[in-house]
Length: 509
Ligand code: NAD
Image 1 (spheres, rainbow, N blue to C red):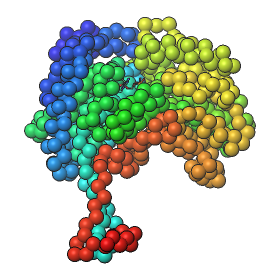
Image 2 (tube, helix red, strand yellow):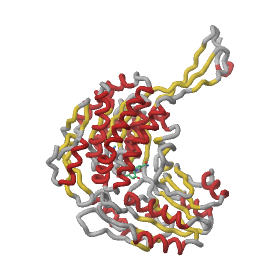
Image 3 (tube, protein in one colour):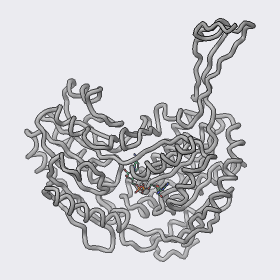
Image 4 (cartoon, rainbow, N blue to C red):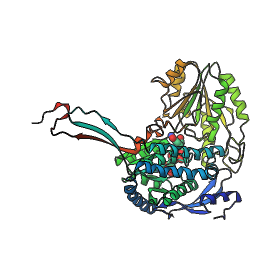
């Protein structure tokens, strides 16, 4: 299409984007009758392109078509649905570099992470293709003669997916790849500040559906904010809403979904700790903490926010960490060698600056960084803070590269601190001792959904179930048996005899 304000944005035409883009994909056509919003580049806060968001009328039209398409899609055999998801994976492979670049440009994460995010959806597609032949039920022995019990898995219909800005397309992949092979249509609302990614991703899926002469409404998507999100949460045509975002909004979504007896899959805030024991490989741990605390500018749900150091390694560890922090190159996320890009929005930067003031007022001592960086973009310094685990601010998720360092004496004390926050997403311990490892993963260990050993808190593989406990929401997505949440379990008892024996030996006349 061309006509972008800056030449470096012209690659976006390879993804079907122009300077102004309709942001609703409704029944096979791009439209939009809501407000026009600008997508900004976090590196300089200049406009990349404009998007016309969805209105409630657009939403209604889209959902009608999507609910109709669900009747067709669920009848297509699961392995055939898998073939469609395979083709989506192939289409993504051809656009990997462009889409990765867009993720980096619009969200602000460094290019290797932007490309990695798209690779994650490709991996999810591969995973889902295999899964499409393994949506197995089971046969259960019946206590009654000439009876048999079966468990059969059926599609739900429409799955709603609401996603956060920090993983603007991978999280769609975790949900949509599985939901589609399970026989569900998908209605997606991406984050309001990453609309170009929502459109580009949708266009890739749409082209595959069109090539296969399938109803385009199988995949329906909207750019927009809370209003569209709320409409999804309240919509009785959507049996499952998968929500990724803050714990505050997640709770609201859960209440709205539960009010209508819908199902909810929540992936909410994290407040993740790394514990370094006295026998740890310090070099390995320092590198891990750097990636976990500074990667994605501290804007991952799995970012390490709390570093718990055994008193015997405290001093050397902090010194080594400060040395590697000094070497972190801050700059344009698209430039080679940059490790720390900008925060996503000017508001994120303001929250960082305010957060540092609160930290100081609660006794936090800044060991490194601690300031915003004067520039037209949303850059801040990677920050290390020494603070007591009891400080209130430590219990909250400050969404930026701020690492709280704390000292402990015993394993029990470290586990207690790990578990002392409202969130329960990810955690990791560095040790070589089997007795520590097995305590850590057992009932008296970490209370999180992700319990790692000798690796960072972030960077999960798709093969495992991803998610966390407590204020993180309890959901599990991606691998393992997460697919079961996207289906409806039917327990069937078949009587193939001519008697009517009752369960529990009941004799009814
Ligand atoms: P957010 O809660 O502000 O927004 C998330 C999504 O909810 C957006 O699409 C937003 O438009 C939508 N929304 C806002 N109000 C709504 C409402 N009333 N009803 C329905 N939808 C509504 O979160 P964010 O700032 O985009 O993302 C950062 C947060 O997401 C962090 O807390 C992070 O930890 C969390 N997160 C969690 C995971 C996970 O897997 N656990 C993954 C990524 C991000």
